[in-house]
Length: 309
Image (cartoon, rainbow, N blue to C red; front, side, top):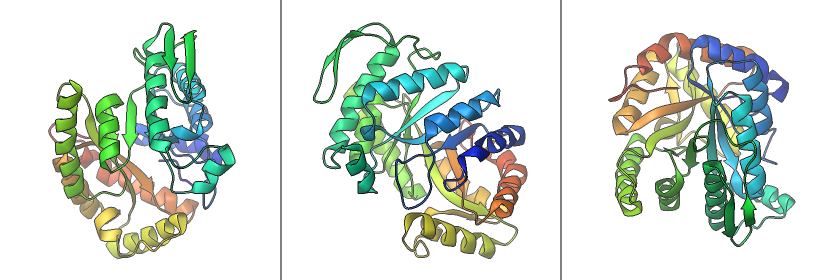
C-alpha cells in the first residue's frame, strides 16, 4: 500500500519499485479529510498506471458515499482504461472521521444505505448499455458510460468492512470481501457467513473470495518491528494500538510474518494488502525490501491456490 502519509508526488517512484519487487498489486487509500495527510486513490493510481505495465491497482478504499455514484463510476471506468484493465475498485462506507462527511454535505447516518444504492449504480453502469434507475440519491434515464471500463463487467469490487452489513454487501455486489483489523479467527468466521449469504443471493460459492488489509512492519528484530508499527499506527488513527498489536497487526521477523500470513491464508484469505507502518523513508524502504525478498516468495505457496500481495 502507498503510505498514507507520503507525499502524493512519490507515488510514481513507489509504484515502479512495487512492480520491480514483484508485488501483485499496489493499493492506495483515501479520505477527503482525516487525522493527517491522505491522497486521493483515483488520481494517485492514475499516476501509478502511467509508469507501470503489470501490477494491478487497488483503491483501498474509495469512500463511496461521499461521491456522487455516477462520478465514482466515471472515474473508475476512465482509470480502468488508462491502466489497460488493471483496476480493482475497493469500496468502503467510511464514517470513522465524520468531519469529511459534513464537508461533503453527506450525512454520516444512512451512509450504508447510500453505499448500497451507489454500488447498484456503479455495477449497472459497468455492465454496459443504457441504465434506467430511480433511487433516493440517483436518477438515471437511459444513460450509459461512454467509454465503458476496459474489463468486461467493470473492475472487480472489493468490499471493505468487518460487520454483517459488509458481508451482505459483498454477497450482493462484491468479488472480494476485504476487512481491516481482523484476526484469522474472525476472518474464518466471516468467510463461513459469506458462503451462507452467497447462497441467499443465488450466487455460487466462490463468487466472492477473501482478502484482508493489514498494517505491519517486518524487521530482523521482531521487537523492533512491533515497536515501530505500534508507534506509527497509533499516530495515524489517534488511538493506542499497543494492546491490539499482537492480534491485529502483521509484525515481526520475516519468519514470524510468514507464519502470521499463513494463519490468514488458512482462514480463507487469498490476497493480503501489506500497509507498511514506518517512521520515515529509510525505514519504509527497509521494511518493504525485506518483505519483498524474504516474505513475498513464501507467501506465494500459502493457501489452496496460493496468495498474492
